[in-house]
Length: 143
Image 1 (cartoon, rainbow, N blue to C red):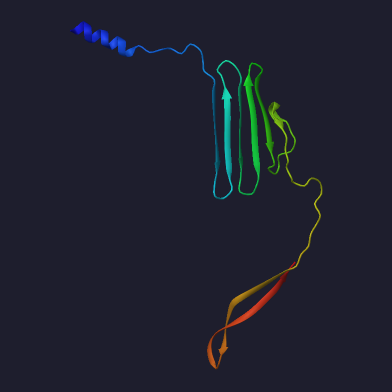
Image 2 (cartoon, rainbow, N blue to C red):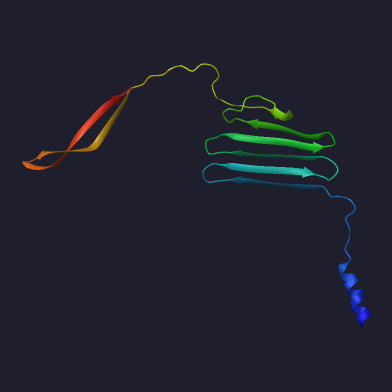
């Protein structure tokens, strides 16, 4: 009986080994009620190339999309943002294709006058023959 129990343990432990890796592919895409978005996709097979991309868009419309490939030639990335401050630079062998709308060069000086009104400025004074607070409408110019 003991031999039968021992033999059943070996049968239960035996598993099939996967000799060759299988190709895979996955991805997701999310969107919030405020307009933010995220996505990711990847496909590949172990020992061969892995290709993918991921990115986001924020509520203001700024985005960053990253495309990548990893194969026998190494890991290569292309980034496509429109975020401020992301010029067409290529740090660490990363290819940047920016649509940054930040102005370059000198900025023009702009002057404006703003009229501000305050409705509830209270002053201590005479209100209908009694001491108390009265409302006054004040405005000022800011330049």
